[in-house]
Image (cartoon, rainbow, N blue to C red; front, top):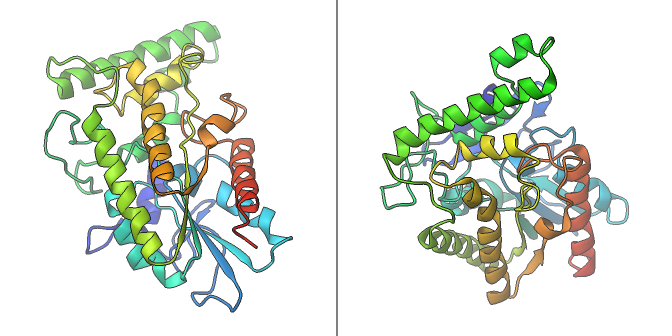
Length: 333
């Protein structure tokens, strides 16, 4: 998976990550305007309504055969033929850069509605980067030298068993192989703790300064859209893991924690709740439409491929939630 994103995404001269126009890697394709999906015209037709979906890998589409923005477009296409849904997501695009990205790459489309599907692993709180929740100066990741986008590394790791496990899985009992994988993953976590925490203990909740920074950056983006007469639609950010099922999905929880190394397992599970509370506060304060996908989607592997990415059924579920919400609030009409 790592090669997918290094092939499809680059950083421009302004330091903004964006999709490379006409780039392709296997089933992942970028159109001539730099967006995931089929070709569209730059000029909006008279009477056309454009809905832009802005997110990261969960919106771009990682493991599912059809991402939720494309499914949303199909759901809206028959009853509303003048509606066009554009997937403008960029994997790894930092929330601080999203306003600049929208202004430079998305605004020429003249969107009417923008669905903001904002996660938190790349919104000023990824501990695996040389960022720190404890006051160390932030540095934006770049795909140069030894620097690695943690999201890309995580996606790569998610689908690969350790080499040792792959070799012996044919003749070892499943429970033994599972134990070996967990042991190796815990060892990697201990190594990262030793390297990055430097004798500090992981914390059980996201520090308040990170939440406040997230709220500030998201508000700036929302205010900018309103100034440009674009209707913002917010969504809470779904996650598979909860305090009630974390033991069932221990491997996925540990794999996720590798990239939030300052957080304990309890902190990793609690993080979506804290950031989603911030999203809800913003929607109430600014009187915005909010689709509560976090609480709506079932927390099972039938819908999730890992902690934050979807199966085909999960992507369809998210698309249906947005479809129902847009109709409920009569945004299309």
